[in-house]
Every structure is written in C-alpha cells, then in structure tokens.
Figure 1 (cartoon, helix red, strand yellow):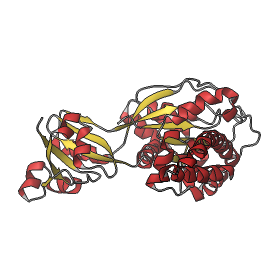
Figure 2 (spheres, one colour):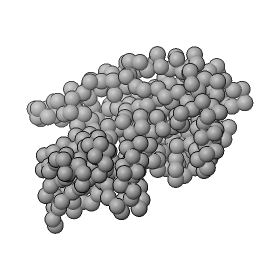
Figure 3 (cartoon, rainbow, N blue to C red):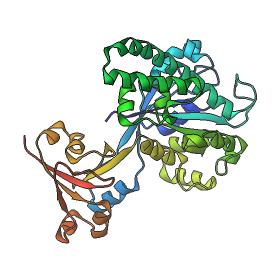
Figure 4 (cartoon, rainbow, N blue to C red):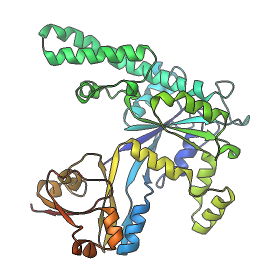
Length: 366
C-alpha cells in the first residue's frame, strides 16, 4: 500500500541509529555532527505479528511473507527550519510525504554527543519541532485562506464551509497547537486534505534513554510523557543503541543471549513497529495455503473487494465472494478444512467489512 512513517527530531538524538535498528532493507549513516543525514534514507520494515507465525506452524507453507511498512529517516530539523535554516524547507517537504511521524527525543546525558540546545530538555526539544511544523502549516493555511476569502463572494456554501475550517485551523496554529488536536469531522478534513498539513499527521514519540533507564524510563522520559498527555500520543521508551546492536545480530541464539543479559523479552523495536502500524489505523488479514502464508495490509473499515485489491486489482474488479475464517477459529480447529467442517468458514459478499486477523480466500472472475 506504500504507507510511510517518517523518523524526525533534532540533530544527534538517535534518529539514524533507530532507522538502522528498525530497517531490514537499508542502513543510514549515523555520525556525531549536524545534518549527517541529508537525503532521506528509506527502508522496509517487517511488522512483527505472532499470528502469522502460528498460521505458518499449522499450514507448513513453502514460504511465509509478513506485512511491511516503509520507514523514512529524515534529517534533523533545527530552530528556524520553517524559514529555511539548516536546509529546513527540504526536510519539511520530506515530512509532508509521510503518513505518520515517529518523533525521536533525546532523553539521555552524554557529553560526547553534540547538542546545540544547551542542557537536556526533552519538552523544549519537542516544542522546537512542533513550532517549526506549525509555522510551516500556518504558511500553507494563510495562502489558502487568502484565496478562500476572495471566493466568498460567490455565495457557494461549500466555499463558505472551507473558509470557516481554514479560519479554525489558523486560530489553532496561532495558539501554538497542532492540527491533530483540533476536532475536525470528515468533511472538514477533506477541505484541507490538499494542504497535507504537517501537524495533522499522527505522531508516536520515542524517548531515547540511556541503558540504565531502558526498562524504567527516567526524569526526561517522564517529562516527555507529561508534555504529550493531552495529545493522547504513545511514548515508547527505548535505548536506540542497544536496539541497533540486537538488529545487527544474525544468529538467533546470540540475539537471545544478548537480550537475556539486558532482561528483555523482545526488542523494544517490536513494540515500536506495532505501534506505528496501529497509528496508521491499519489492519492485517491473511491468506494461508501450502504455497505461502501471507499477511496483507489494509485500512480499518475496508470492505472485502477493497481488501482483495491489495493482492491484485483484478480481484476487486471481478470480485464474486470471499471465504472467511476468523484467526481464532482457524487456530482452534487447526486447518481450513477442519474449520469448514464445523461451519466456521463463512461466505461473505461485497459489503463485508474485513476484520483484523481474518483468514481469507477470494473468488473472482474477469
């Protein structure tokens, strides 16, 4: 589906280290100086899902294919980015192209890692990024608002509605608040969709802490959590360096020994990836056969023909029906045949809204 999550933050907070840990298909340069990353690095990330592993155990396919999302490592923003400081216009344009933001915030002390903003202050760091994104959004809203004012004379209700939502956005941004906190209905969101506002994108925070705080957090990560409480945003506490080391280990036994040493049941990255997937309001359905067990990504609320289209557009065009078994029923009875025998395989039509975890087989004709 081409969905992207962009990693953002100030310079030297651990963005590229996180990207290297999380990405299965690319590596970024991570160095102790500003703008080490200029062109955004892009990589594909497997979404950890124990359900596909369980299905593979039951079906024993020739291959297993997890679902993926795209992660983009965007260069560090600085104060004044909205006015072009530090190649700010370029970096802000990179953010505009992603669907969700993973905001990395420095929550550790290390005098060997450069920092332009003085003493460690995660709340201030967050606000610097917020301010630059808000200023850029304000610029976009002002331009469209100016055009909308001229069109008000047409007495078109649609134009008036668009003008009103733009005014609300401007007032909100003028108060130093993000658009994602503004309660907009579907029609209002459509009115500003073409602006691709930066502060309207869903956000997930990563508190990059020192090793001693990776399980408990610290005063810095606690301050960050308090600062974003009103946003209803999740904060993942992790040590990016440890996660990068785990990701580099190809031997599963070595990886497990390393995690045991740090008292980890799983990499914190797994939680981060799952949270990013959830943030994008994505669902997973499965196809399960001898050739492959595969996870497919769809949006929450998609109907069966839409879900079929991610396999091939012909599946949607010629959709006839979907054979559906819930994940829990498939696991309980152990196979498609056994689920069918006890009446747990359902035949669903074009209006069926796919549920997260459905095991599906599509019938189509073109």
